[in-house]
Image (cartoon, rainbow, N blue to C red; front, side, top):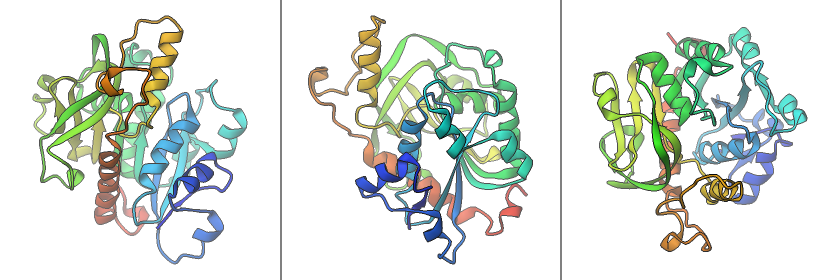
Length: 307
């Protein structure tokens, strides 16, 4: 089954050309099934790029997905046209007031790692999002800073600033092969990493209700399960496109900022060569497994979510 997207959302054409099955609203209305409702709280400045990345992954399952885009109510973005935000995004306060419930929610990262959580302009509203998920979302997936923020809010796990950016594609170990979220995963997994902060396993070990599923000797914990809050936290970027690390490297290099060549990304670590995507299959496995687990466990009647 396809992912349901507005036909004028840029992701509709992008994914159609890639061979991902997409469906417009009028087509979806003719199918007598309940779609899985997935929302994306998009905190990234490049909204359209992030929409494409996550829609590509959740749209690759055999289920019909209804995709909803959410933004912080008062926070404005300078990198995406106001028309796009007005046409396709719903402010969180509107979603909250509607009483609507979702099978899944993805909370993205944000380029504000250097700030203390309490110094983030929309932190108060984001904390409301975290609380709201407990009664209105069956499963929440916090990504990079979004995952760090959520695990800090619910468990007090701190993020730690790094001396140098963790940047590149790092080998990770599959620590829980029997987990339904890692079905089909190899023992050894390559994952893109791009962050100035980290979550430490020593801090996670203080919480018996948190389980690390994937970790790296070089970059630490990657994927953590939080059953009590029906959440997963991933601190790295399975969703990245082929060229995302290259774009980040080129941007900082051209601006004269101190930046290392992303490790294990370019062939022979040579930025003049085309980077190879060696994480795509595991990205589809992870998000496909998440969608499948939601499908297997979510109530058919949406109003029962959270009870």
